[in-house]
Length: 395
Ligand SMILES: Cc1cc2nc3c(=O)[nH]c(=O)nc-3n(C[C@H](O)[C@H](O)[C@H](O)COP(=O)(O)OP(=O)(O)OC[C@H]3O[C@@H](n4cnc5c(N)ncnc54)[C@H](O)[C@@H]3O)c2cc1C
Image (cartoon, rainbow, N blue to C red; front, side, top):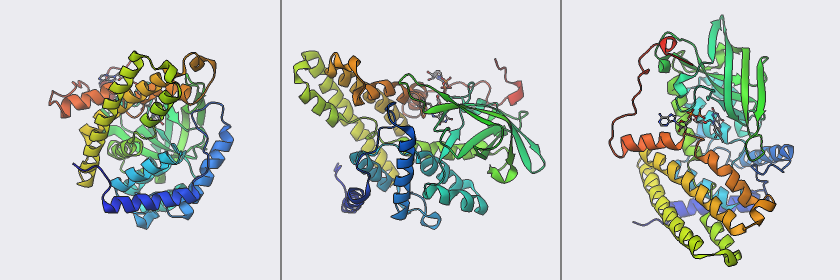
């Protein structure tokens, strides 16, 4: 099998490199370094999004008729790889461009597309995802935030949690229960929430690295116009699946989560700490990384054929979390006592790695998918799937 770029892919990569070499900001601060000035980071992100928009690179996989570049998943992967190569990590517009936009394109009416897509492209609207709740994460369909219809409006009350970027967001993708008398997946509706609506309270959650990247969001009788409902009443689960599939695509790359090459460079710089045990670990890690690349090639091949690599991406997510953790641990080992004396990129990676095992679907959930779809084992038992939501025992 040949893993090098096809002539078309190589030409596209060269075009992307040319654009990034000319226009990418010289240095974008690491958002996960808790010493950065957040306001400067937000301003830089907006400036970069405006530059992307001005040159037609704001949303490369959106269709052309809504302002995208109309390109496919292969080009998206190359684009992500080249962004990482240029030192550009996750953008604060990732949720808007990667998740909210594609969901509105798939399920929105003409007014919703006109109203919401352009501000995302132009760097005028940041979005957040209001899905998880204290009692609904892996089992997202257990969500209890309720929306009750009153004329042309819905009144929403509940609590969301782990909402990344909620403190910067102008708009949120909100899931709420509109019918508790039907099975849990059937009574959910999807709304587009103006985060400045009265009754929305965003409270930061501090993570163990010291940063406040995600939030609790309290919704207290928030009024949402029916015009902001995305898809049919009770049809929110299907709309949410579009968001989650796009989240997998947007987050799927491993290049931005760890760099094995950087670890090897770090090992060369600290060769005095390369004992036989560490060499052994590095060699084992090398085989994991090469295996991951083969798996990635399989994902790319499937995407190129128009197939959805569901099982492969679950195994990839699992492997990425494991490798990112090991890379960070070895990076810290190589620093020796300095690892504890100051804060730097290896410390940030080390403190950020546990979140990779949880965000976007936990390790255990990915293992369930692999067990069912790769090994052909029976489905994870779900006793409450067909019960009306209001008859499911809840603590
Ligand atoms: C950095 C970060 C950013 C996030 N950003 C957002 C965001 O912007 N918006 C948002 O809505 N959410 C966000 N989340 C939430 C994320 O989607 C959830 O944390 C995740 O889905 C897990 O849900 P939970 O935390 O409720 O854990 P739970 O689902 O309660 O899981 C607890 C433990 O039980 C295990 N478990 C649960 N079910 C099973 C099962 N069936 N089989 C085996 N084991 C199981 C889990 O693997 C885990 O170990 C974010 C999370 C992180 C870490």
